[in-house]
Image 1 (cartoon, rainbow, N blue to C red):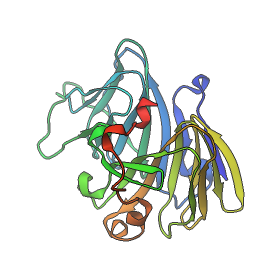
Image 2: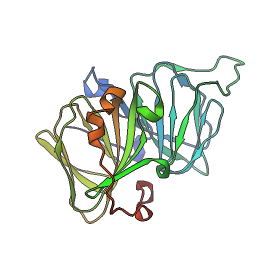
Image 3: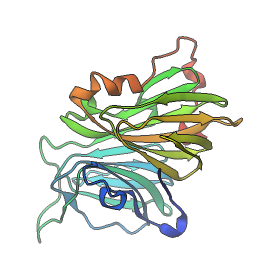
Length: 261
């Protein structure tokens, strides 16, 4: 069972990476980054798309010269080659980042102007703009998926909010690997024959075909972020069953988003 924890002393770094896990066929890269008030150098990745999800503070995530000031819960998706940089507002801010595939870093050439490139668009969303589904004490807020990214494959991401004393029964995904990061609360997670209690800022890697189960046995809600590899083909089958259907009894006005807990 691969579990990793972010602590302030770590600063920025990968929580999961195929070479660290010893899984050469894995596609999921997932980590935490902390940025201060000094703007970072502009860079891009020629071989991978990437998303950045703010978990603490307020910061500007600039894409191809366009600013996006976001607070906790906001997310930015960048396609391959898009220039991006980071800068905290009023102090440092912390993000999660997810990548499908490996990265090569590229930088603007001397004298190159960083600006809008036609056909290369970022996706910027808040939790309130996510596709929400709720059932049996679980709320799913899907932020990124193939149909809104517009790519044959991408690293999807969603919030899941689990009510107190609820269970996601044991299940497996035939060809879907994921990382589950605990944003708030405590949850008991089983992967195969192993189980562990995870708390805020801890994450677990769930390989494809691994039977896993989630149990919130406490009196408080638990919020997690799921990063998972999905393709258009998979989305028609296995991935769709991962999400829940809207419970007609759910009052959307009473929904509390993970960033609000």
